[in-house]
Image (cartoon, rainbow, N blue to C red; front, side):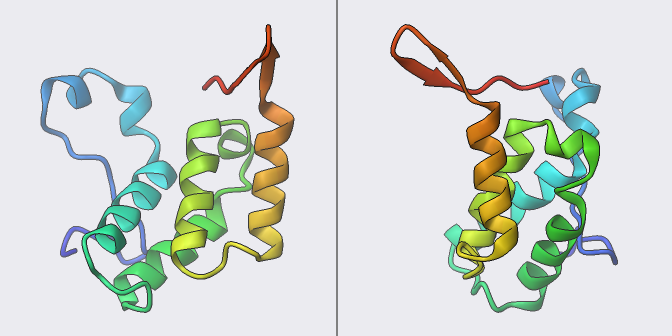
Length: 116
């Protein structure tokens, strides 16, 4: 939790072969923040902890930015974090769920989502 930035975000680590060689993944601060915060809640940190609240606030402020709004990975992680924080029924969560629905692909009876 000490790795959290003052704006509430977490940044992707600069170690690991996959992580180091994948600048696209490393640039996804909103996804990283949602992923880390969800992992902390899953491991037992209360959703009311200031670290989690700050992460939720960061994600809420970033998720509708143009690049994030097209990225199904960011949207899904953001929606999960909102649900973790008790905001799964919020207007923002509804907009995210609607956007994910819009971005789905249906093919031969299968529904899936791509990532930019």
